[in-house]
Figure 1 (cartoon, helix red, strand yellow):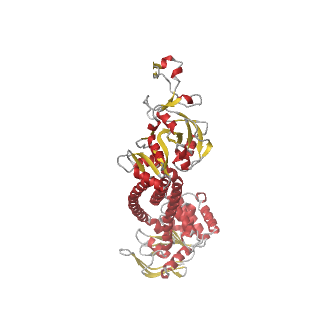
Figure 2 (cartoon, chains in turn purple, orange; figure 1 turned 45 degrees about the vertical axis):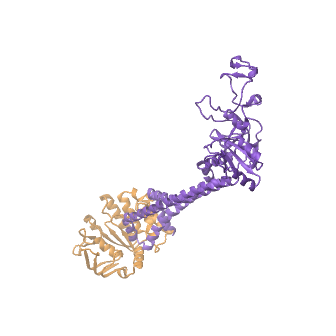
Figure 3 (cartoon, one colour; figure 1 turned 90 degrees about the vertical axis):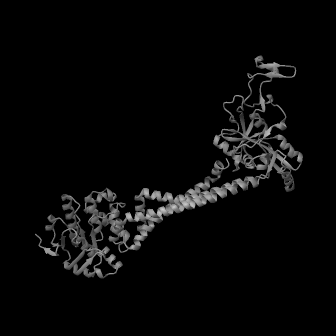
Length: 393
Length: 222
């Protein structure tokens, strides 16, 4: 058997292009459905696990999927914003605890999530390095963000401007990194957490500048009355919150009107949750209350419907490839008639000839299977990250 | 060594008919077979080797009735008792020189590939002047080197009978003479019998006798 294997091995290694092509075809047929299944299973697992641990999400009426994806996975698609009054409404109901989430801005490609301390408790997030948020302008990094950006407590991170060419737009804020979270293997690893107020500073709702009443440069004053001092554009706004300028930061307007992208609602019990959901079913309210699991289940149902179509396509392509490979083998046998005849003349029996050809096919199949297995292992290893990069974030 | 009596053969569906009333070669003889193309010289070698089976008549090689053996026995007899040097070398491109020489040992159960066989293959290749090319691919060889490899393959099992079909047909005069020297030398060393088909009349004096296949008459050796 070892001699047959040796001769067959010499044949397949000599005909490299043919062998590589066949191995690639067979590997693809095998790996595609397996990888797709793995990938979808991992997607379902990740999407559902986070959705299941988030009882209710309140947001503006509109796409429930956008709301769920933004709140749970900090997706780039920001739903229509609601105000902090929504969170206050939940508190007033005495049926649940609200956790406002404002996931709109980014820093070096990672989402900045403005939220409250409760968020860390609900998600079970622990600080691995440094400390938790304490002052305005501080941020805590998810494990992956810290790893990829090479940041640690004491470093700083600048938020990305939303509109580069709009000089009146949102200015970047230099945030101080005070902590890094333990790896949670969720979207939290890929987020930059700030206090809600810091998120509003990034938006420009809160800002810091020199106290105009004590302005050293009189040319920054546009108008001065008994109650108001109006500055002109010459007044420089701070782009970094430090201990020395912290007191100069302030917010204008009613805090209840400040925006958030959603409110995670943690009902005190099942009954409270049901009551709350009922309240926001009404058409006249501007909010919607979604159950993330239901939304994600709907999304997965669609994905698996598409998967069924893909399975059918893969089956047809696979069948075509198998037929093509059979044709290649048949034509190859024809081309090898002289060689086969020589081997017969040298004393080879039909059985040995069949064994030789069978071993060549076996080598191709086993190589493909090994490659397929290796690829499946790689896909399995990276599926967690791949799903987040491709599906979630 | 070879005894043929009343041999008749024809390819299925073809017009070709080969008839050999009687033909014999003694052990240790070096016999040349000449004749025009298409006269059946190669067919005769294939019949003696048991690659083809006759319709009628008897072929005995070293006392064994080749035509009477079953397929597997005939194959086994051919592998162990007959060395065949084919017209177009019939080397396998995907094997190197050594693997081509050893190939019959890898594809047949009747031969066992041992360390001793490998040593003998190396020695045979040295004798044939291709000892330094054992690892070279068959397609990278010159015509002369290919023929020497094919001869090594035929001689490796130390057969009692060597059938050579135009063994020097594709070679230049210098190579032709050298390879024939080597073949004769080895055949003599192994005390084997040689039956060689050739078109080259210049080589005939080197054989013990010549058989003219046209009309199947024996020509005197000059």
